[in-house]
Figure 1: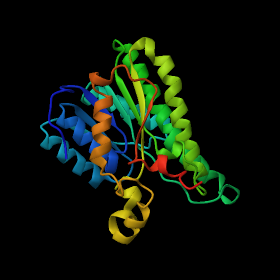
Figure 2: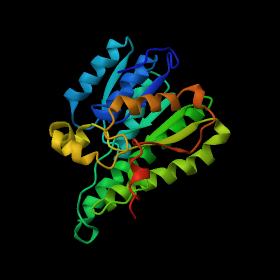
Figure 3: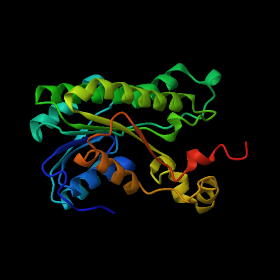
Figure 4: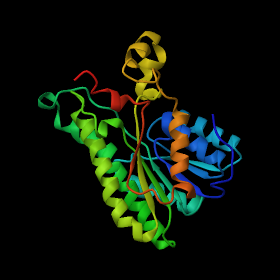
Length: 262
C-alpha cells in the first residue's frame, strides 16, 4: 500500500537493505512520492530486482547496488554509483541490519558480536558519514532516517549484540542532530516493533506463533512494512523539517505494555 503524491519529486534517495521488508517498503513509498531510488542489497539480488520493478512501476528511476554496509570501502562505492548514475542524494535511509544472535554474552564468539555491531552500527555510521560529506559539498540540506528498533530501549536476554547496536544507533542519531542542525540536515530515528518482514518469517508462516507473539501488543497485531515506510516518508518530507534527533517508535504500544504486571 502506497500514497501517491509529488512531495519528493525528483529527489534522490539511498535505501540500504532495500531487497525486502522495511527497506523495500521505503523504496516503494518514496518512489510513489516522486523520488528516484538507489536500491542497496547485500546478497538477495532477486529481491532487489523485485524492488526495482516496483519502483519503476511508480514511474521512477532506480539502480541496484550490491554492497555490504559494514565495509566502508563498499559504502563509498555505493555513494559513488549514486552520484554517477542518478545524481546527488537528498535522502538516506539506513535500514540494512541483522537480527540478534540469540546467544548469551559469555557464550558468544567475539566475531558474532563484532559482526552485528559492524552491520547495524558501523553501517549506519558509514552511510551517514558519506551522505553528510556529499551534502556539505552540495549546499547542505537533506534528510536522514536511521531504522533502529524498540530494542534500542527494551533489553532482551540473548540479544546483547543487537540491543547494543540499536542503542548505539539511537545515541549516534542524537549526536548527529546537534552536529547537523547548522547545515539544515534533518536526522531522525525510527524504532519499529514487530513488523511482518523476513526478520520475523516464523510469524508470517505460522498463525499460531503470530497469535502468541502479539499477545503483549495492545493492538493485538504485527505491523506491515508499509506502515513503517509511511512514517519514514513523513520524516523525509518538508513537513518534518523541525524534527531533529528523535526516535519515532512504531510498535502498536508494545514497548509501553512490557512493564505491565510488574
